[in-house]
Amino acid sequence: MDWVNVSIPQEFILLGFSDRPWLEFPLFVVFLISYIVTIFGNLTVILVSRLDSKLHTPMYFFLTNLSVLDLCYTTSTVPQMLVNLHSTRKVISYGGCVVQLFMFLSLGATECVLLAVMSFDRFAAICRPLHYPVIMHQRLCLQLAAASWVTGFVISVWMSTLTLQLPLCGPYVIDHFLCEVPALLKLSCVDTTANEAELFFGSVLFYLTPLILILISYAFIAQAVLRIQSAVGRQKAFGICGSHIIVVSLFYGTAISMYLQPPSANSKDRGKMVPLFYGIIAPMMNPLIYTLRNKEVKEAFKSLVARVFLTKE
Image (cartoon, rainbow, N blue to C red):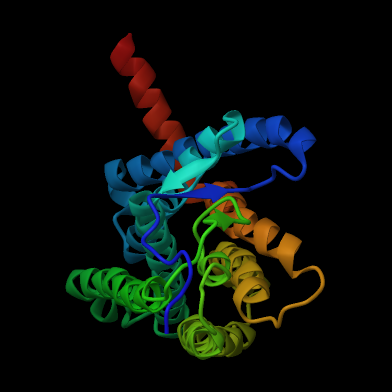
């Protein structure tokens, strides 16, 4: 079959919020501040976790991975968004679009797996405290972290290939502020029903499987905590898991509402707003959630700041 105006585009136009021009400057300011806070917050978690020997534990090793992930996550989208919000010519090159699509999918899938790994770490710490050092040894931690990143890479290759192999028809206008799968499928010249079904199946498999593992881990954790006689002990156990539960809720709540809900009359606006939340707001909030609720991190941060000022003096 011959398609009219089918080719590999040189660039795409990202409409973003151009239908609401009065929003562009406020959004530029908000995204810029959010990006700066995200960089500062996650770099702080990474530095504190690496420089304080008391935090050289599996929990903070995985937290460091999460911070690196969040830094990459926001950097893959926010700088381009800021450029387009500030410019009248809102474009992205084809190569830039492919890279952005791959990175966004890869990092999102990696975070799904990493959150499941972190829940397993909490399960081992609370349900198997005496065997915890043996179970969560350094080699296993490295293997689990590597498995998270590799799994995200593999999933992204598969989903990106499914999306990019479709022929695209001009005009190459993406009604979004980033190159994401649903937005690119709308540019296809062919019926995308089969692709959408495969991508939906992949989303269910790769989003819900880690979520189910997280829920199973916390079911065992809840049983173990309820057996603790001391109220202080129960409070401490729930405190250890509280930050992770909040992060999981933020990430999965928005991701599921984006990928696992059927289209609706509000799906256009939802398709734009939901990625803003789990691609910008959640990475900004994660270090705040972990630091504000964690005495060890706050003490390590104070110690680091004190050392910096003493060194300057």
